[in-house]
Amino acid sequence: MMFTDELQREAEPIINAIYHDAFIQGIIKGDISKDAIRHYLKADHLYLNEFAKIYSLLIAKLDDQADIRFLLEQIDFVVNGEVTAHYTMADYVGEDYTSIIAGGEWYPASDHYIKHIYYNAFKYDDASFTICAMAPCPYVYQQLALKIKENHDLTGNPLKDWVDFYAVNMDELMGHLNRWVNRFAETTTEQNKAILRRNFLESCVHERRFFAMSYHQETWDV
Ligand SMILES: Cc1ncc(CO)c(N)n1
Figure 1 (cartoon, protein in one colour):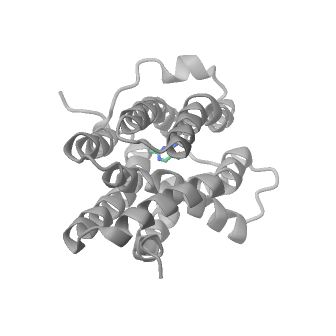
Figure 2: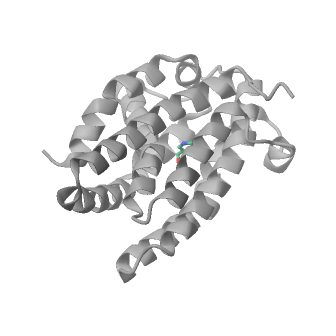
Figure 3: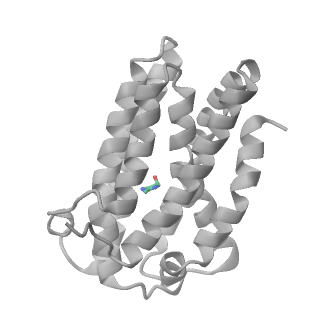
C-alpha cells in the first residue's frame, strides 16, 4: 500500500463526519441558509488566494520542470478555475459574487488552516511537508462530492453544479500530489513520515472546521 493510500484510509472517518455535518447535509437538501453560503464564500475566496500564493512559495523549492509547470497550472486553476464553483453558490444566494465576498476576513477556522499551511512552507525545505498539508483541500472535496453523487440524485438541486465541479475536476491533481508525496515518503525517515501524516490529517480536520465555521458564521470576537 502506498503511503498516500494509508493517509487516505486514515482520513475516512473525518470525511464521513464532514459528510454528516450540517453544511454538507444542507447542500444535499438544497436548503442550506444563504448566510452560511455567504460566509463560506467570503472565507473561501481569501483562502484560495492564499492557497495560490503558497503554491508560488513552493515553486522556489523545486528544480524539476514538470513539477514547476504543474504548480503553475494549479495556481491558474485556483485563481481562475475554481471561481466557477463559487459562482454557483453566488447564484444560490441570488446576489452578485463581488458584493458577497466584499469585507471577508480570515475567520477563525480558516485563519488556523491557512497558517498551518504557511508554517510548513516556511519551516521545511522540502515541499512535501506543505503538499501534505494542502492535499486534503482537493481530496476532501472530491471525496465528499463523489459520496454525495453516489447517494443522491441532485436533479433540480440549486447547488448541483457545485457538487459536480468537485466530482470531476480533482483526479489529475490528486494523482500528481500522491506521486509527489509517495516519492518523498519512500526515501525519508519515519519521523518525517509521522509529520507528513499529521499534516494531512490535521488539514482534514481543518476542512471540517471550515464548513462548521461557515455554517455558524463564526467571526473573531475582537
Ligand atoms: C477550504 C477549502 N478547502 C478545499 C477547497 C477545494 O479546493 C476549497 N475551495 N476550500
